[in-house]
Image (cartoon, rainbow, N blue to C red; front, side, top):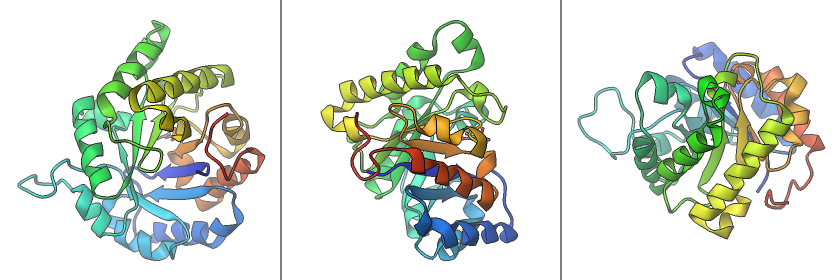
Length: 255
Ligand code: PEP
C-alpha cells in the first residue's frame, strides 16, 4: 500500500480546470505515491478522460441507495459507472452543512465499498472540542459509527481532518497529529482487526507544499487529503513530491 495524496476540489472547477488534471497526469509517473483527485460531479467523467489512467478520479459524496427518488443525489454505482475509483465520505462540510450523521456516513461507505469504490472516511474534532480536550472522544465515536465493519485497507482509508484546520491555514503541531494518528490506528485495529494495521490514515487540514514533508514523515501518516492546494497542479504535485522523504513506500504503512 503506497502513500496516498488525495485532492478534494469541493465546489470548485469549470471545464478549464481539466487542464490541471492533465498537468497532474503528465507528472504522475514521477512521484512516489498514489494520486487521487476528486472534482465536482459535473467534471468527473471528463476528469477520468483527462487523467489518462495515470491517476485516480473520485467523487466527493454519494447516496447509500443504488437508485431511487432522491433528487440531486448520486449513487455510488453511478460514480463507479462514470469511472470514479474512490469517494470522500463524511467530510466535515457534509456533516456541518448537510447534517450528515455518522450512521449515514456508514451507510454511504457500505454502499460505496459494495460498488467497488475506495472510501475515504473523514473524521475530526471542532475547535471547541479540542479546547475542551474531547478530540479523542469525538474522533473515536465517529470511527465506531462511520466505518462499515467490512472495511479493509484495500477499500477504506481514514482521513483525520480537524475541522478548525480546514481552509484556515492552521495545523495541529506534529506531535498532535502523530498522537491522533496513533489513537486512530489503535481504534481501527480494535474495530476491524489486525489487518487494519495496513489501513492508510491520511491527515487533512491546510496541507501545503511548505508543510507537507514534515506532516508526511510523521508516524502513522499514510498520506494527505488536500483541499485548497489541490486546485493547482503545481501545488498538488509539490505536495506529492514531498512523499520522497517517506519510508516504506512499497509495503503497508505499518511501523
Ligand atoms: C479539505 O477540505 O478536506 C481540506 C483539507 O481543505 P484544506 O486543505 O483547504 O484545508
